[in-house]
Length: 442
Image 1 (cartoon, rainbow, N blue to C red):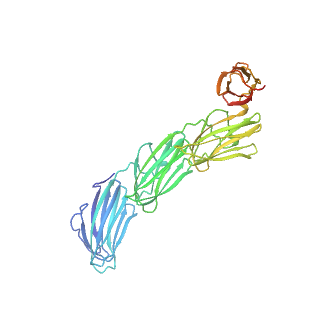
Image 2 (tube, rainbow, N blue to C red; image 1 turned 45 degrees about the vertical axis):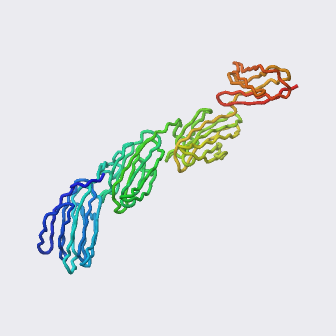
Image 3 (spheres, rainbow, N blue to C red; image 1 turned 60 degrees about the horizontal axis):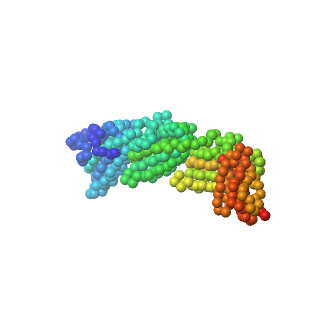
């Protein structure tokens, strides 16, 4: 919020080689005029009590009139040189965002000027309402940025950057939104507690055309630092807001390589998270015999991630890129026949972060299914399979279901079988289903 406020007090002092008197009191937001000879200066002391945008509107008829604003440390905040032909006034409107403190405004005429320099100035100040707590220029004095709360701040002539501490309690998605009203360029960066760069972005804005920055990144629990820094003299105000969405996973970190790979259990659902510093998750698959492994993967990593199978010699057996995002997850289901041995399943993304789900099955865990041949005129289908497996028989477009007994035996009563009739039998356990077809014989 910007509001006009009387936040400044001024003391007018005019000096030169001779004696020059002040021409009446100086009133804020009203014009004040004066005349300077060569090598004369008029000095105004200002006290700013709140963060403000200070504006000086000045015009003059001098050959070389210089207007300077300095802070209490002697740093030049504003400078403008005015050159007039003596008939038409030179004009300038100077403004700067400043911190509370003491300032000196100096209007001076060049030593070699040949005529008196009349000038008029008007000084105003607009208070800038901020929430940032100065100093916050380093990680040791960073201001904590709360979630779901907009924080207003200002970069001024004396304040080149503001740093906020972001405390992430759980792994998940960190969303940052920033609107800048700076008069030029700014850099936005996020670093972790070890000063490793998560991202850095360049933003262009104007006072009346704000720059809009929106970024979401998946991070692990920890402390992060958000920095907004200006370039050159591009000062102004801004607003920042952070949000955090935890992501629940059942992966076991660290699992960043084959030596740390998580032992995979078939049929179990797995969920994992790739973050800005965690680019790969590895899972170890052990097959006691030749088997067909089926994997069903869903990704919310925008725009893409990769899945890869490798053997113990790090030879790639399967590789695929998979696209998706939170609103439209990508899904891929495929199978790979592998000999007995140990293999590694990797989910990775070099540049992007997000979460994923997958499940895996292997045919060697499916129930063994044996069927007694069915002859013409027979009225039953029987055989053996895994105990308690769900057995289904389909004949003449009708399906019958039962649970195999404790010895794995199953028996179905069917209509009188005709020679050549196709019968489909399946047996299913928690790992998958085995399906076979037979034909009624003579």
